[in-house]
Image 1 (spheres, rainbow over the protein chains, first blue to last red):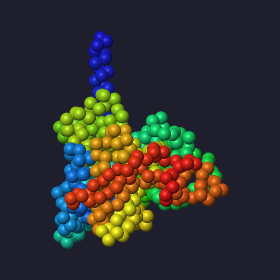
Image 2: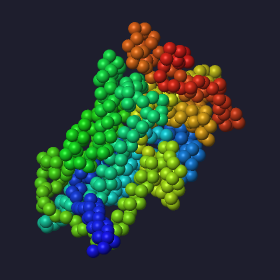
Image 3: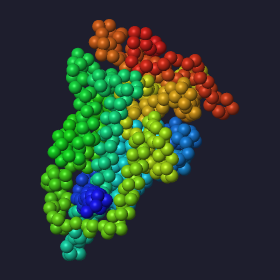
Image 4: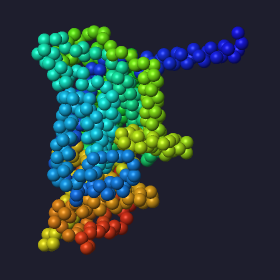
Length: 329
Length: 227
């Protein structure tokens, strides 16, 4: 056997192994239950954000509002940040569109015509983000990508009105209900995309904190002071923890836990043994950050987005008493 | 609403052709995502060049994914503080009104946060303009002033963007109440200020003198003396 043929064989084997691993990673059918749970949680968050626009709708987006369409276009430049709200400025038009947005988001959250509603919910959320880019902060980018991936998946298969209607119609006709097809390739693709995107976000957040030290005013995430400066923002915080100035080691430990916890999450979350402690750590850290920063919707979204890493079997154990066994099976 | 029970039914695996097509789309999506996170900060010519791959930027903008996701929360830089808009308005009757955006008691918190982000945007544009990097300096204050004049029936006044400086641990531990109080005048700094008037139906803003840098931490001489 020549060296060339040996090398060719080795490359072929490497290619086959990579191909098999790729197929296993992306195309192994998965249970859509985590995505169905995410649909309910993300839909609820989208509904909350939408509802909080209601009192300020005309003040922000009206003809003489704080964000005239022309100003927004001028500052964000030409691009594909499309929004149907760009074409509405009258009070009645905006109110009607806002109510329709409510209906779409409610359908999505409850799982009614879920496939169509998931695309509609994404359009509604993106339209508000693109119409008022300076009103958005940290929660919207996370919510947007969660909704994007939910559009790809059968996220109405469980915990939905669609499923309830299917079971009821089957019972009326006296026929066994259609199989819920628990495992789905589309669910796996959506889950994998969500997991990769989320791990990347954690990595970039850690990079922003740790590499920012070299670029910006002070290495506060390295010196352990960052949490103090977050605590020191009086308008933002939910809880006044300025008394911690007497306990600098607590501030230091908390700061390091946030930065290094994010880094560890991004690097190790795909390891099955590291996953449970990392999910628990992330939950504790996000709750603590919510208290200090006041970014409650953002922290809540980060916590529930982590559900993409929880095994469907564990979810079924936790929620088993809620829905019971699927009568269709 | 129902939940699944145990079982092992599966959707059929996609055909080889479908898997190839899906893999290609996945590659494109992940490539675009990598471009977004790598090129949204000061980046090399190569990374900036990747943004010019046809349709990548448009795709990312459309899905609101053209971001670095470097949510650092706090670096103690010039913009790491709470900002608000303060307007002293004058009505045709000579009455003076002060309006603060966001109102301190605005609930729920997300509504407060949105208006605070608008004030943050004014501060950000102002600082960028000082470095000559902001083409749109003044557009957001103009829109805010127009709205506030209309809402209050005013004909002119002064609009300011102010930041709330951060208190150091030493200041929080100080025995002097004026230093220990985070709401003392020393902890506020004006970043942007403009006189507002209406001329021929148009709202005009005339910037007043430039204020100093906005280092977010108050020292012994910080603040501009007004709460």
